[in-house]
Length: 240
Image (cartoon, rainbow, N blue to C red):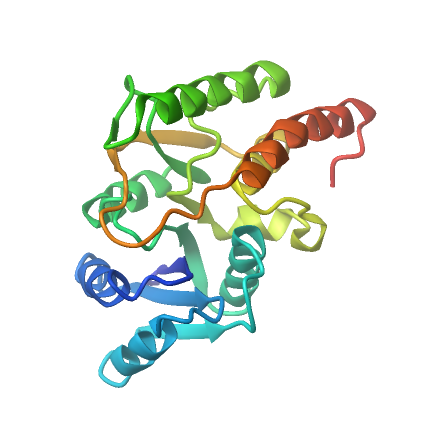
């Protein structure tokens, strides 16, 4: 039985990158499909994907009415995958900060592990083109998450990852609270507390060359308080 993979790519104003990225990742595996979830990009990202779909049946698109957040985009994609026959469900940014050549490496590790994380910090610090201040914030934020939650993940906010189907089936997706970097922390934490096996695969993260970063202060603060909430729920024994 062929175990198919769905790669979920959330987009907002990614017309410079999306078609090229999709073509590259589709070449990595004949058993890989792509689902783009676009939040009504005014630059025509959705139209670019629709055009590509005319010649590529392995590409699907969900168009949402506006900017509804990264976490809700992935939850939408997860539910889509669970309604289909996908065994592996991947997350990936649209801006080439995640190297599409690493897709096969994550899938290879997913043959043995339940959740595979493309990690910027599992083998030193592997980030290109970030300002030093942002690098320090990200690095120490990762340590902060590990200290507060006890979760043995060196890059808990990383957004390049692969879930086995059974992980997403075990998590109540309707109870996911967070949206930005905190979404990645929350999903990792729930997978970990449910006893799934997690593997970090070292990657090199490269800051986007085209388009505009979606990072903002609200995303950072959400992650700060979310780790305390998760740990509190764990201590109470009420984590869903």
